[in-house]
Image 1: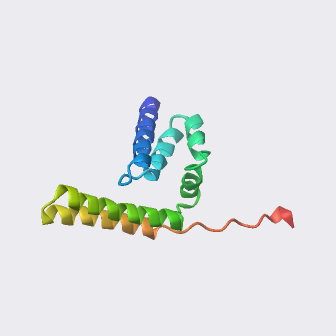
Image 2 (image 1 turned 90 degrees about the vertical axis):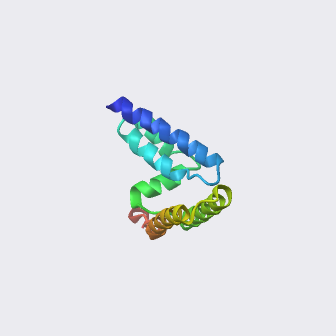
Image 3 (image 1 turned 45 degrees about the vertical axis):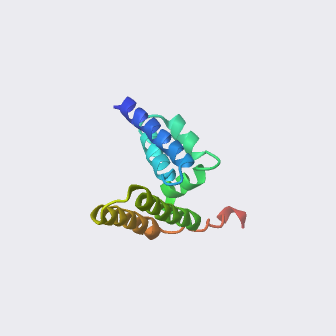
Length: 128
C-alpha cells in the first residue's frame, strides 16, 4: 500500500507542477495532497515539500492551522474567475453546463474564502 501512496504523491506533484505553469489550474491543492500522500509513504519527500522555499510556507500553514493567507485567497478567487471566463469564451458551453461549472467554481471559492486567515505567531515565552 505504501508504494501506492508514493505513486499518488508523485502524481499530485506532477499536477501541481502543471498548475504552476498554467494560470487556470491550481498548484497548492495538489501539493497539499502530495504532502498527505508522502506522509503515508516517504517522510523524506514530505519534508522536502514542507521545506520548499516557495510552497513550503503555505503547505505548513495549511497543515498547522488549516489557514489560507489573504494573498492565497485572492489568487485562488482570481484564478477561478479567470478559469470560468476562459471556459465560457473557449468552450461556448450550453447554459446548463455553464451553470454547473459556475456553481462548482462558486462552491470552491466559498470554501477557500471561508478558511481562516493565519494566526499571528505567538510571542516566545522564553524571551522574557
